Image (cartoon, rainbow, N blue to C red; front, side, top):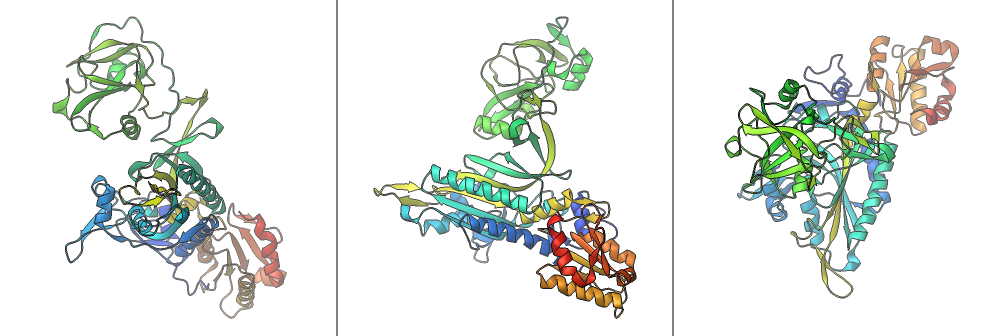
Length: 555
């Protein structure tokens, strides 16, 4: 591709509202442009990077037996009503009606559609197992689009689906996808973690997320010894110990205006962990309960949902058993204690305005409902908590969709069983953005070579028609002939603009040909990652051979 022909609107300044590094650089490098809130257009160079990721994903899913197809984004709402997700998912699901008044949805994922198709075909155990997948646009009415292409209302996702006779078959396909995902992220050149995660709206029995660590990540990953990694939403670790409450603090305590843990702990001169925090909730329709955690801990909403096994909501003020800010244990109130609370004396609300009291906790049945904190340990080793971008997820769905949508098969004896399913998603746009986040510097992007828009950029410093330009043209043609994706900057711009754009766009290797190159017979060569100059450059007459020899050493 010639730069003079490439639609590449580079910018010197990032968008005023950009916070994430990938948002800033992808706009400045002319890779993407915003059309509306959460709606992004991939421009030619950006789309090249996106599609290089897509091809890696396609190759690896094909390698485990996936069969590519394509399903519609616009779907009958009836399928989603049968699965139960039409009502279960909130405002993030786009709902609409066609001209005949039929309810429709814009799919954010395709479990319903693929299950419906399979239910029309699968009859016998002989029809199983198989894997179907596609790359398709997803629509999600994201309430807070942000961070460029990281959190959008429309995006492309690869979702694959496995269909098996039993749990053992599902587990085998699940492992195949885990291995394929590891190869995908390695090939894309990312730093990544596989983490235990919550099944969320997808349902099922098990899930893993794939995370790329970076400061722009909206998720947090807990990392511990022996390869432990889990999303903070569900992670578990041992709490930091807290010293016993001093014996000098006892009985009922006058705490005027002290409605927060910090205020009470500060007034008493004790650590927040010497207090217990009451979190009143309504479970199901009308079951009132109080979740109790240490004062230095927080209730994890997803962990609480999983522990309860049913829906809940925070109790409203008029539903409380005492004044807000002074709630504590009370006769007749169901108490759900977090497992990090050890037996001992704690300060709790006295259920009376401006009063707390000392409470003896004697132990009992507990739940793991708190969020892991910095300083917690696993096996005596402190965990790390790092921000990360979610770049993929996999789910053991089991019969979550096959039962409501009637996907069954007959076994060898003629008995009917629901098909056991798995679902596996991966986001090419997020992989591309994560690569920008992880591999960039103050001058621009330093793409991993597997997913860069262009492998090599040839910068011609001479004007059109000069010997330098003609030499750059020859090098450009040599590189194309050996199968590399080359970009020739043949513009009449000055060296400063050309170098600035090259560093911004981030091709893994840059060859510069100017007057000095004509005198020496060599092109100046620089590896973009780390701005490493290649000693001796690359001979212009043997540019293809020189680049081929250098290529394996480029990250």
